[in-house]
View: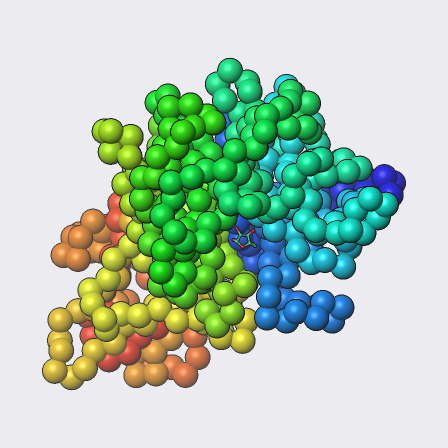
Length: 451
Ligand code: FUB
């Protein structure tokens, strides 16, 4: 088992370093859910769970199907590296390898090691009939190899572990069992050091997926909470890690994309806070295939959380010389600008922006994308475009009527094409980008790029 495990990690390491793109969702070649984000040595690591379409040997085609975990990392929250599989259901001695239920995990650093916590259905064995265990795998680095413990944590069961290390080095484990649970861990990170407490005072509604963090001396116990039809994100605050906690309300409403679950984590990087969460962007008709997103997060002066509205644009700055996926827009003129999949049969191909006009409506339709870094200047602009009848496009900076960067006469064509023009204005530094349709009735844009 150990040899197989090491071989699997070697293969995963060789398959790693796939560079992914910016914007939401941040993981664009796989489904990903339940993101646990942490900053280790100045780099952001995200430990999500991994939704997959149900294989032939898994009967529940309409349910979550999850067999392994990847870890992703980034130093700018824009370019993400997939480090490959770190733990899977076939390589943990106590896990039922036909369970396909490796749900929300977490990872944290303590005394020179990285501890990865994950829930999974247990293999029936002597003294154990089954049920969900919470296991630990240990590594010298945040990206593995992680070596799983032979047994799950004794005395607890449930899902969605979260490991929090207080400023004095004391570890705490939060999880969802019979209600939202919390206990102190021993320094070995493998055994409870206190009786679990149940977080109370939350108004009626299903809860799961806790995440615990500390800011300015206050403890935040945060969790998905079903107030109405689907999961919102809500929180409690306390002055001590083991409470008592006070319910503070919601900080994200239920998804507009009809994703029943949400699951989240918080990080602070260089003084800015970020919220990681998931929706079902790549799978609008099956909400058990989810995708991780990240948005900026702010606090009120009294420490309460300012509610977050999910964006497509996400966080960070995009290089002008990368492919700017303008369909991940910051703002748009009106309902005559929309977004759709490029290929509804394979949604990971991404999206296109669609701009259209009726003959009565001659105001330019526009779509904008904030925070593009033009660095030390540009010469050419390229757009990937599709329009049967043709039209005109302008790129402007900073505002709808801001400085003109480039204009394109688009000839009608039944197929997608790339058009390049010289820019009229060589911008430097970071600007917001505006794309306007100044003539035409229907144009579709895949991306914009500058050289
Ligand atoms: O991903 C499976 C489950 O859905 C997680 O464990 C929950 O938190 C919810 O996101």
